[in-house]
Every structure is written in structure tokens, then in C-alpha cells.
Image 1 (tube, one colour):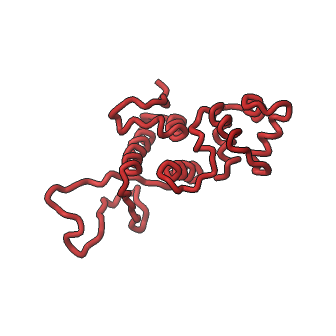
Image 2 (cartoon, one colour):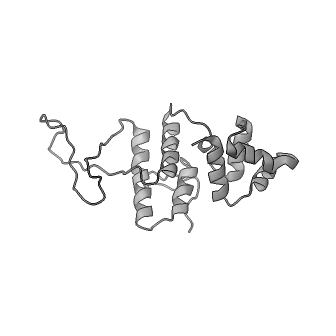
Image 3 (cartoon, rainbow, N blue to C red):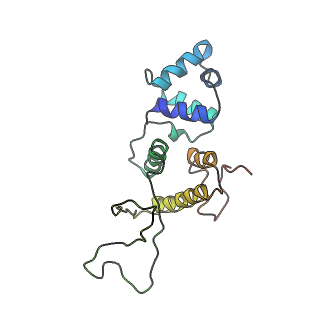
Length: 184
């Protein structure tokens, strides 16, 4: 997703016009026109302006950047935008530990799942991360997906959680997030 598409998606989510956003970030009399150029991709805002937009739009500034995925935070935010463009592309599931059984004790490298209508026709490929931050994040993301699917949080609350991650992170319910995202 381009920087302009991100700006437009978040601006509309915040129910702001191009003129309102442009004025709020100090673009002067051509505010609407400049925001329109950024959203179409005919111009690219400089980092300082993107940071001001992120502040006005109340999002983690990295959510508006052009990401490379070269660190954990960027990788996670890239996955958020991929899901915005392709809802439902990620199916997260929690693996269950079986005490006393070792993985890969035999030549069978498979991880087994229960065949339900939620799974694709062909066996899915799974991935796990040998990194605390990403693994912890994936666990919390699974919780948020399950809450949305169960109707415990709205689609807008789910998007709000992603927009300000990691400030919205509660470590799977272990503490209060530093940024409020649920409508209570």
C-alpha cells in the first residue's frame, strides 16, 4: 500500500476531509490540493510532514511510512496493511503443546489440524517465529482477530488497535495499554 493510500484510508477512518487534514498540518491555502496530490501519489510528503499528519490523525507515525520490513515493528505494520488490503488473508491459530511428546521425534514433519470449513481445500502452510516480540505480537493479534470474529470488538476498534500498535498492546491482557483503543 502506498503512502498516499495509507493517508487516505486513515483520513477517511477519522472522518476528515482533505482540506481539514491539510489545514490541521499547516499546509495553508492549498491544503486540500496538496493532500489530494499526496493521496494520488503524484507528490510524496517529507518525513516531517508525515509525522505531523500521524499526530493529527492520531496514529503511530510508522503506519504512514513506506516500510521496508527490515525490523520487527516494520514487519508487523506491513502485515497490518496487507490485511487491510486483503481482509482475512491471515488465519492465526494457537498451537497446542502436548507434554511428554517431542516434535520431530519421527521423520514426520507435519503439524496436524482439524479439518473444518474454515480451512482451505489444500493444507495450509504455517510459520512460527523464533523471536519473542513477533511471537508475542502474533499471539495478541490472534486474540484481537478472535474478539472481532466473536463480535466482542468492532471492525473500527480492531483497526484502531492496529493504527496505534504497539501503544495499544496489552500483552494478552496482562496490563493496560498505554493508548486506549476500545470504545467503552
